[in-house]
Image (cartoon, rainbow, N blue to C red; front, side, top):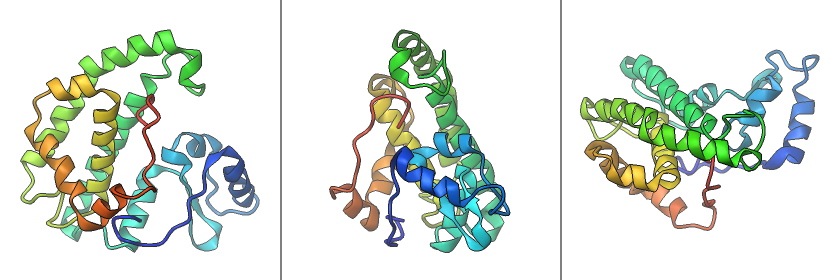
Length: 212
């Protein structure tokens, strides 16, 4: 929404989300979400659409918003976008899981010792493997963007995850050699609409765990 300079209302927290869940019960919604999808999606995000349909899977949300806000790739690049964003979200999910190795659905703070070990292993192993894949995506791109020659929802997804990585694992990020990824962050941050957002008080601080 910020990239497209489109107005939005942010609904935050479990109390606010509960009222939305009540509107999309199995009896009322043609495509009801699973509660777990809502709980574990980024920032408790839900999107409502025609006929009472609620989207809670992040890949579906990103694609739908991308279409609505002119942040969708060219038709010939659509299949690339779907595949790349699926990988980005899988990376994010794997990173989050490393902070919840004992109880996946419980808070990081009741499993700190186990999480610190698992997240360190992730930062020195699988994280670097994932980042190498994204480095290759950018290296093989024909433009400054992930796909197509314009800003799309793919760029927003990758930008968010890279910023989460940088904030969550600063030492591992600093020591890693990924020139395309490291150049990508300031390039996307310089998009005028995003630059204005990043300079505003609407930007939240990082939680400090779970890549959020």
